[in-house]
Image 1 (cartoon, rainbow, N blue to C red):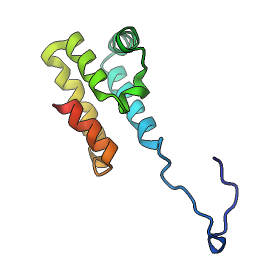
Image 2 (image 1 turned 30 degrees about the vertical axis):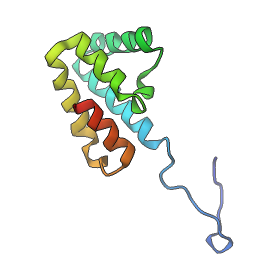
Image 3 (image 1 turned 45 degrees about the vertical axis):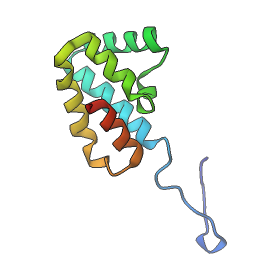
Image 4 (image 1 turned 90 degrees about the vertical axis):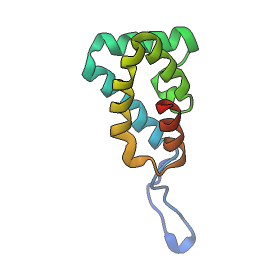
Length: 108
């Protein structure tokens, strides 16, 4: 929904934080983290997510266990470096319930 004008006196409200904002931010953080390590890392994770779960990086916000399992399969104990890099960038949003859940599952 795009709001072009509003009038609070008429009961109009503005959605300052749409529900998909954190999903988009999380997808960007995951993608950026993987790409910072290297394009082949990003490509491997994206391919494995799709082959195993038929999902994409943005879907990991609702299913963080998919990302965690793929990272563990591909990189073993080293996956924690990636997980901690993601957590570092999203920790300031951990007060949001869905982000907290995402991080909790990823860090288990």
